[in-house]
Image (cartoon, rainbow, N blue to C red; front, side, top):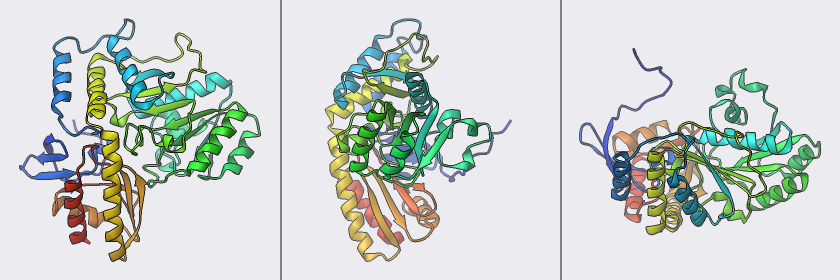
Length: 377
């Protein structure tokens, strides 16, 4: 049997990692500025994380959600403290796409309607409902297209109000920062207007913070830059250091109904041990503030480099969620960074390098990257 060939793979095989460094099977050391797609929030193999997971595995690794799991309650308390949203409730699942599926279901249950507003360039996942609100026809099959979804331009509040006025909308879903769409940050004013318009219309506002949340933007959630409180918030990538997990934060306006949501693996003991360790490390090491400070340093260095490079078009982002847009394709730049300079980076489209480094990134790491990028360019 062979693997179903759906990924374009670089010829690198990581076998060991620590902090912001990864080593391959040949012993080559790499600087990780991609964090396994924004997943490695507290750095690779943090000692407290490793200890928590291995210790839990020796106690109990899994039991179903038919019994009480105090670790779930502990995680909920910690997320409430870190986010400032202590009055919200937490539903646990296994991935960002699953979190978004459940958020969309909640909106439909709550309003009794089925239409959803999403935004051009959006990416919310690959499962049926999540991909239906994703603006990418290449990954949306005919089966997924049966959902009632309308895509509107980002930052166009009048278009949103016009759609809401029809009275048939269950929810609006928007990313705190569009990642796959090209590090597009919704205007803070638009986010405030969107919150006001959805509340006035009795429509559920869903903030997809799967990639932009958990401290990555320099605040715990990216939408907090606008000072708003959504009805539902989804999260996943940075929650558990690589252990599969997703979560939905639900405002107090929602009344839970037994059987409304459910999961077999969500909130299992191992995932909780991993997520609790990550939450503790984020707090103890002040990683949200580090993401803000080191992210600003990285952006400033990139702007200096951009002023000397004609093919660097724009640098944008918040915290350690940064995009570097070029005038042309960046495949060769990214290849040279990986194989000549041994630095992992990501991509958004053909022309943007996407940087999603672990939140423990240092200014010294930034200097290494900037020097390497300058040499490659």
